[in-house]
Image 1 (cartoon, rainbow, N blue to C red):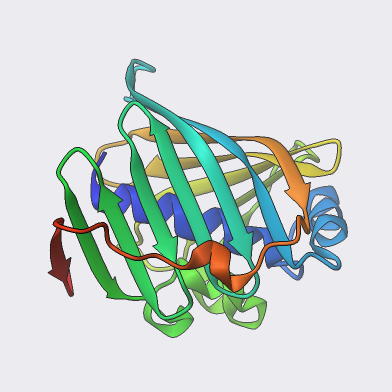
Image 2 (cartoon, rainbow, N blue to C red; image 1 turned 30 degrees about the vertical axis):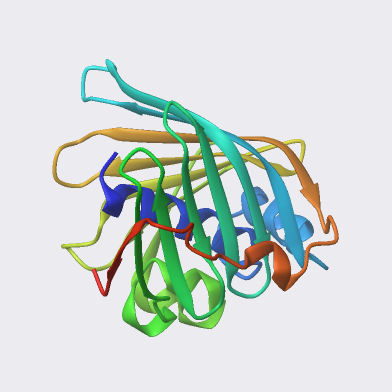
Length: 207
């Protein structure tokens, strides 16, 4: 998986979980109810990437954690172990297969259209909410013509976010992120998002 696609997914969903003022009809109501009082989140995930013909290009799975307002951790288990950790200041990506850590400053909301979802008051400046006939789906797209994705759909099941689907703007690939056994406010702390590079790994900065 490309690093840009990995970052796109992990930055987008946890932010959506707190974006309680974004639009829509029944989907908005479900999102607001889910976001009310939400300080942290944990769960499992399954990720599937398909091409324009529906052919599966890649499958992966693992676990995720999120702590408001800006800390998150994604641990990929299959098919290759990887960790992506945002500690509030820096964004770390550890690829065990490459024995390599890449690190950069954690992006600010104003610097990336994807991250404004952590600040709902900026949402209308960067996104267009799309109509949907399904009351359990929130569909949106970037206002900028060169946005990172063409369209995104957040799907709910029984009032809980169940999946995030992204359609790539350039090659038309679809990434489906299924969310499994989400736990609200599981008692996480900053220590859960501390990352120390393992001894001996290569560290690349400012990528």
